[in-house]
Length: 380
Image (cartoon, rainbow, N blue to C red; front, side):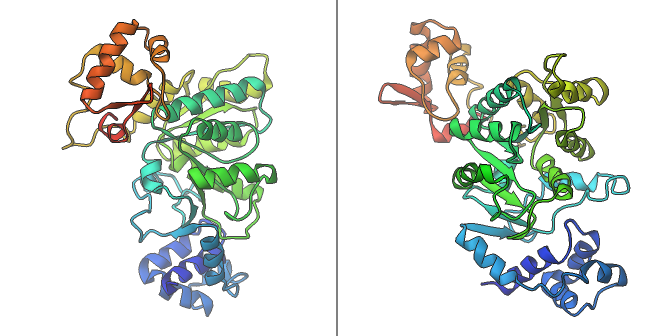
């Protein structure tokens, strides 16, 4: 086991995240030398006061062993998997007004997917724990629509809107990321243990806190900045006047990310917060997954990089584009389903499918049609 990685794990525990003083020392001396200095309290006075209580808790190797048993990994700024592009927004944030507007020291991650690749095309869906049936339905519809368009759903795994978004993304065979306010080995809420297990298997579970750390209110507020940072846009689906979702939206704005909000019944206190976001804080009104995709695309995450060939669909006719867009991002669809979804006649859909198949954009899977794996990146 890498000694340097054990040093990162040790440093992840000695302060409450994020710690500007510790991060500054790591940037100068590196993780190993900083860890050695912290162990013997050979650090500046300001940092000494911060690490005094925990510097003797040296269980980095044990924490890494726990993580390994869970199938996870510790990702540091030295790794290729560090989401450096997504964290650039912290350089723009006002740390005087929001002192915690800083990158995490390291990330504890469970899941097989690449964090920077997933978060490069992602949107956060957040909201109240005490959601209504309306809010739960809208969250599920947005999440399913996003993953159908190849966009990952990021949220905090809480009851209510978060859980509805995660479940819908998984149910649609899509990608979802749960960002926790405690250790990745501490399922919270406990009622979502099975959900978090599914996310770890099919998506990503992420935390800046080492194993065993229990969630706390201030950690949720700190965690919210990572939900916003790992997303191209943050959408508040349903929230009361006082809601943690408003905090996530505030983080998104501080990081230069767009914010959307879903309107609800004027009689519903559960939508009062989203109405405030729209009316007073400049949030974009969101009613569909396409709204979210367009909102997130303003930052350029979804834009085609220079030097890449044109989109694979650009040279196709309108019928082919409509049929391709009618296909689900994951799974398959029957001919009649495509007729209904595209609004074209059966003959036109069949003709479009024939051309799409020749272009190797779709395949016939036992009578149902699905997008080819290669075309997912060619057509985005």
